[in-house]
Each structure stands twice: as C-alpha cells, then as structure tokens.
Image 1 (cartoon, rainbow, N blue to C red):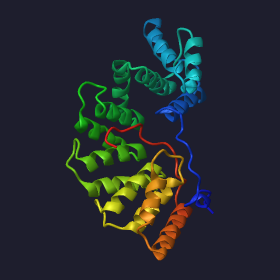
Image 2: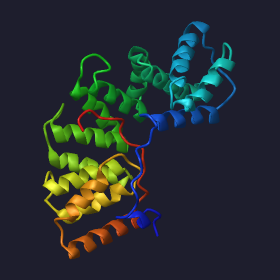
Image 3: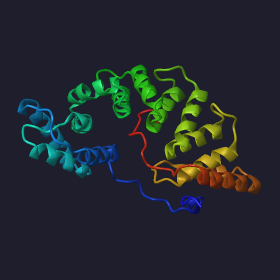
Image 4: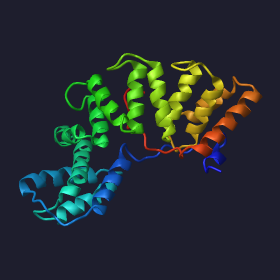
Length: 276
C-alpha cells in the first residue's frame, strides 16, 4: 500500500512550513557541491572570488538558509584555487542562488543566463521566474513562458506548473485552459501536489476539461496527502458537500489506485508565482 493512502480524507492539517522559498534547491546544490569535490584544475582570482563569497555570506546569514553554509565554508577555505571544471556548474548555481536571495539580481542573472542557454533546467526555471516577477528589468511574461517551456520540455514539474499558470491566465501566451490542464496533468504524474490542486480546480469548474466533481475530489484528495500550504483539504470538503455517497466512494477509490501506481506527492513546488 502506498504510504499516503492512509492519509486520504482524514489526514490532520499540518501548519505551513516555515522554510522559505527555494530552500530545498539550496540544500541540494550545497550538498551536491561537496559530493562532487575533486582536485582543483582551474584557478579563480581573488578579484572574482571575493564578491562571490560576500554574496553567499549575506544569503547564509538569513534565517532558514543554513544549508548554504557548507558551500560558503568550502569557498572560504579553498584559497586562490577552488573549482574543477566538473564542479564549476554546481558552484556557480549555488553562488547565483545566494546572489538572488540577497537581492543581487544582476549578479544572479550574469551567472544563470549562460547556464540556461546551455540547457540547465534549474537555471531555466529561475530565469523564467525572474522574468515573471520583474527581477531582470521589466516584468516580461513572454520571456518567462519561453524559459519555463524549455525547462518543462526537459521534464521539470515546477516549470510545467509555472507555464500552466501563464496559460491559465493568458499572460505571455494566449489563454488556453486545455494546455494548462495538460501541463498540470504532466506535473501531477511526476508527483506535484500543487499540480493536483490546480487540476482539481479545473475539473470543479470545467476549465480545459469536462466539469467533473468526482475527478475534482480525486485531485484535491491527492493534493491533500502532500505537505502543502494549498487549501486542498478545504476545497475537497467543499466539493464533497455537492456529491452523492456513491460519487464520494468512487472518488476515494480512484485516489487510492492512483497513489498505488504513481510516485509519492512531494513538496518541491514553484516559489510563489504571482499569478496564483
């Protein structure tokens, strides 16, 4: 039995996590940077290294960002030579993220954009997010859609949801509920609680899919098994009030079967897209 099945319908509400946006990304990057340690093959001058350390120091000092500390310690103790070609990409992403959360968008953009151009899906998502929120120059939904699409095509669930929101609201792309639903469904199949929630909304109101309270309940129910701040539990109960006993049992059965066949619902979700 899938471990989440036991929580369908009656899992107690969990308070929203205090962890700030993107902390999972920083933890992965910092841990990976240490795991990829290798003898140094290239030299970085103090002129370029110092501002990178300063950016990471400011970021690591913020509450909730202690996971950046290992990467900072590595930089501080490395002296004039720190990176091998194999490690450079990971270190650059850590530094770019440190600059971004410190508000140094220019430095973050300078590092992230070349990585995005080379196909790094993490960089593509962050670049899309920066364009969507006006952290590059002016807010540009079309460019946000471009970068989200590139990452989504590589199978990134976060970018699929972000692009789906643009289609749902007609920002930077023509409004297309069917395309939004397609993207949400793909992200849901990868285990995104937020994607399940968006699908639940679309089935509830018949946007891009036929109106279907059973399927709305299914997706709200699955979303509610994830540790998410989304109002999935509230909407699930709201939909249930308009359903018959037979419909409710069918919806619960479908949700149980889905959880048996698919990956666990996880928390890695878009960081506060402004459209939702």
